Length: 162
Image (cartoon, rainbow, N blue to C red; front, side, top):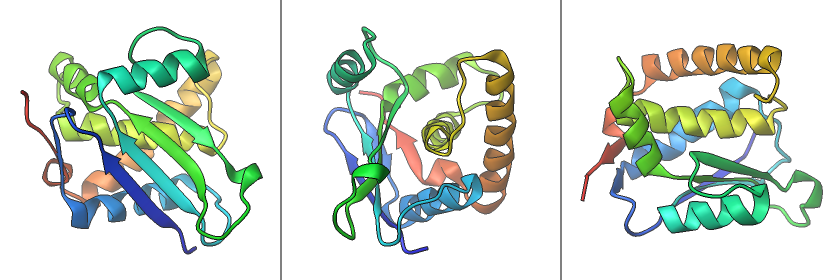
């Protein structure tokens, strides 16, 4: 699979990213999630601020306020090689807030989970119904366990509180 990973980090997200590792991490998530992509397509992961995620949430999901991750699937509309097949918008501050609430969780782990969650949605997983949510959580756990054995997540994503 020749998938190009593109990522962006919007100003005012307080997120520092290890450029050499983030693309490897996302590529591994795609592999572990068995997400099928057209050959030579791209995956875009955008780390955005509160106003951007709120605007996307309102416009495309119909919900008010911030959220953790929003996924878009463009695979049916690809025209050229290298086009973006999947796009994620992730709000890093939400990961920071959640990591403070959870026992045995830290920022980089929570942020990585958001990427996994968004990509799993593109693989057909859903979390609306309880039985589907259980299935999705099991797959998330499997992928996170594998990622933590291969990567030091805290060296990929660092949150610098403003």
